[in-house]
Each structure stands twice: as C-alpha cells, then as structure tokens.
Image (cartoon, one colour):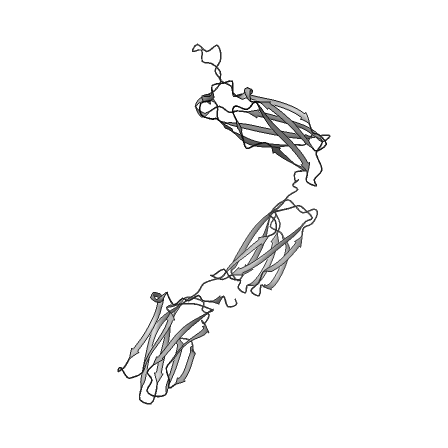
Amino acid sequence: MGLPGTQMWTWTLCVFLSWMCVGRAVAGPQYMVAIPAVLQAGAETKFCASLLQPNETLVMTITLKSSERNTTLLTKTSSTEFHSCTQFVVPLAQNEDVQNFEVEVRGNTFYSKEVRKVLIRVYNPRTFVQTDKPIYLPGQTVHFRVITLDSKFRPANGLYDIIEIEDANNNRIGQWLNEASNSKLLQRSYALSSEAREGNYQVIVTMGLEKIHHSFKVEKYVLPKFDVKVNSTAEVSIVQEEIKVEVCATYTFGQPVPGSVEVEMGRPLSYYYQSPRIDPDDPLGLPIIIAPSHKETKQTDKRGCATFIFSMSTFTKLDQKALKDELHVLAKVEEEGTGKSHRILCHVHIVVTQGE
C-alpha cells in the first residue's frame, strides 16, 4: 500500500499529545518537544521542538526507536533559541506497535535525555467497487471502478492481485491481474455477451487474503415506452362546482401517445366509517355506506391529452364527517394498437372553510 496521507494534528488537542519538558536552573537551557501520542502507520505527521535560554552550543537529537530499527527524525545544532516543527513519515507497521520517542540535548557542560512512549496504530484502508448501473441487458457493457480509501477517506494506493467477473453460475468470465490504483480510481469495463445468462453477477477484487464483492443483475427488462402525467390543482374548495383534470401521455422521445384515457375520481371514507358492507336484510338494519366515485373514459387528442370535468356534488352528498378531505385520482392510459397501459395515482386536497 502507498502512504495514506498526512495525519491531521491540531494544537488545540493538547490533551492527546506527549509532552517532554526539562528545566535546569532559571538561567540554564530549557527545551520542550510535542508529538501526538498516537501515530498513524504510514501517515505523514509532525512534531515541534523548542529550545530556550541556551548558554552554549547545543545539539538536539530526536529519534524514534523500535526493537527493529532506529529512525533519526531531527539533528539540530544551535547556540540560540529556536522553535521549529518537522514533518516526518511514520514507519509502516503490520500491527499496533509501541515505540520510544527519544530526545537528547547535548553540549560541553549540559546533557539531558528524555524518553516517552508513542503508539503506532495501523489503520487499514478500505476498498470499494462500484458499477455504473445496477441492472444490464445482455450485450451491454459493464463499466466499473475500484477505489481504495484511507482512514480519512482520501484515495490511497491499492494493489489488486485479481479482479474478476463471475456470471450467474459462478463461472469466471472476465479477469485482470496485478492491477494498481496509484491513489486514483481504477476503471475497467466488460462487454456482456448478447446471449449472457440472466441472473446475479459479481465483480470480485482480491487483495491478499481479502476479497471485496459487488453484485449486479443481468436481465431482459423493458423500460416504459411512455410516461403519464396528471395535471390538476393540488387542492380544491368544497364550494366550487367543478374539478378539472387533464391527463397527458407522451413517449420517451417526446411524441404524444394515441389511445384511451380512463380516469376514476373518488373520495375515500374516513377511518371511522371504513367498515365492511352490511347486507340490507341484516336484522339490525344498518345502512350501507359506499365511498363516492365517478369514472370516465376518453380518447387522447393530438397532444396526447384528455380533459375531464367532474362535478363536486358527486363527492359531497354524504355526511362530510364520513368522508376524508381528499380526492383520489387514478388515471390509466392504454396505447392504441398494442393494448399496453400505464397507471398513475395522485391526490387532491379538499379545502373545507369554516361554517360549511
């Protein structure tokens, strides 16, 4: 893997920092070094060092030490005060590792060494696979991409041993070997056979012992040939006499659809009155309450539209407490010559003013 990037480090997060501070006599040298207590393996981070009141030429050496190796991060010689911050790349590690952060300041008459523990933590990058569509027709091309992100969701370098595509029978139908993302998106494509078997397919990315799976479907689906739109106001007043509804159907390429339009408008019962129908011969003599509705059918015009006028009185004959203050409009367009149809349902709110 490549370097995941720069470790974020903020001076305000002092509580998370390891501090070293050694003071001699008031007039003698003093120094301080600050570094995050937890370091991200492979990331770029920084530490800051300060030297105060040097009375001679001093050499400050800062070293990160592990059981396997020592890494010198800074060697600075100065006879004057300084404050500097240094960027460095945290050594890579397979597992979490506690290492020694050592600061040594040496002069002819002055010597001090302090050691603190820092934790190097491994943040494994995550790899994702994405296809340009969830469903493909046989014969279409599957475009997919693979990206590896570090712990801060920045592109990292991914090394992919095997990238393969399996069909619905788990047969390998496509393969790429030893691919690398180079801290970018890796994009590839695969052309499906026109006779491709329908079912669930997979893109599988292998990275060492890890496998990432992404599924997509291959099936012979048919997109709707035309769209239906209902043009009506979002609300109507209960005192108005008529309700106008226009239904239009157009092909996906914009031309009007010739055919018939059936529109049914109804006003549903309130929840309190939504009980089963009662037989009129029932000894209790309970009345039957049926939600009012009206249905009409017309042919589309040259625009692919049909206009309907419904009388409000049709939907106000019952006790208003038994009805909801809304109308349901169900439109069905049937294409001439093929019999193919498309339905759409919409709702219109009824405004009931006080005193009515």
